[in-house]
Image 1 (spheres, rainbow, N blue to C red):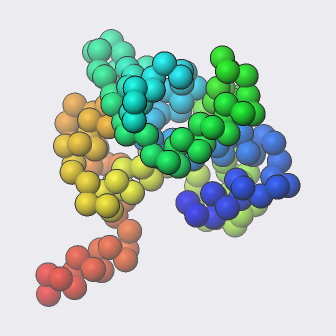
Image 2 (cartoon, helix red, strand yellow):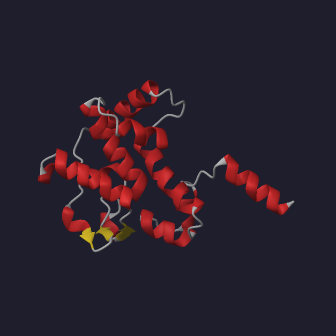
Length: 168
């Protein structure tokens, strides 16, 4: 994540890479799905929260309320500055955006396959690494059960080692 963030800030980054990577990083910091980021609207801002109905679960009327982090706000500020207000985060299809993320991974020699699903997993993992509550994570991600959210959490090896050491 740090490597991607540093690449995003490089002055000579290709404009397509910067735009797609901004959406990816925004997903990492909000947990939003690609489909929701492409629909993003400034009306979703409610004080210090993003408040919206996810596209995927709209038929159930699921509301999601996610705290706005400083990192998400920085990505949003860049998006407002660099795009048309009614076209925020509207790059390409999810498949094309994922292809661009694969290009970025190759360029940066990142061995992980980067796609927008990984961005949601990153959000979930970062939240839980900061001792977040699984029930709260489920509400942030628009899941009805904590079991759905558990699939997104990828605990880092260093954390696993710490947990193991405290148990022994």
